[in-house]
Image 1 (cartoon, helix red, strand yellow):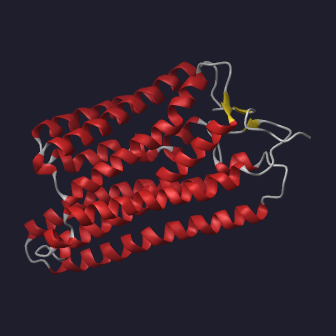
Image 2: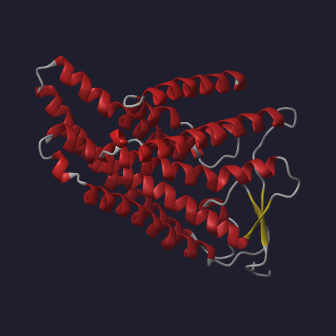
Image 3: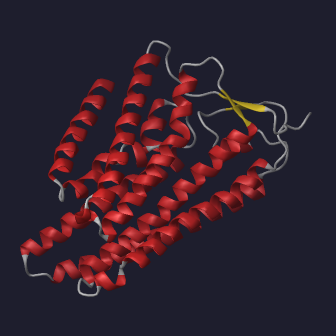
Length: 313
């Protein structure tokens, strides 16, 4: 068998969609993609322009939106093109780039969500020192650390994955290049690498989850000691959006491990891309509190999502 070279192409088998429903599925995915992309770009722009949003919380939120935008643009456009194209090929280099960007964004979000929990902790538990502890320089360093950690993960795993000898079948049983599905085409024994990959993923999960758990445990203790109902309500409002985002993100990872690798429409909407495509209305909640225009956009965004999923059902 001949090894696959840099000039060879893989073939993405794509989604399992009934031919009669293909048009509706394409329309739903495209609409959600456009709405999520628009919401993230508008959010990033408003946070940059409006001086009232120049705070650590909104800075980290803008970084999350950038990651969401790159994350969904890594695979969804290719998926949409393949749904209307007869040729569903992706080059060897393109597959490697897709793996790198996917790993970088998802790993960066792991770290950033932990840092956002730490930011909530400082804001709730040490409000007097908060402006000093979370100054602009510290925020830039935290964001850079999240991006660096994610990029390091992609730079370590992508070359190893693509350096395995690939021969025989070139069909990837998925709608994008993900490491487990790509490794199935390898001619060599990948069991050791897969075990190491699993250990790496567990470690990367435990670090931010530990920070999130510790931060919110201390926040709950602080809120419990508050005597003012207004103070408790404000604390809950400040942290509720972040908790919802964390639940969506880690819930999707847990669901994915239990369900395995599938390539149906539910996978696209609720396993692979909930972070960027379904999280947009949630993360708009905090921004809308500070800006009347954002509040109107947030309401319109929720209505758009409601209509899309009503249409999908």
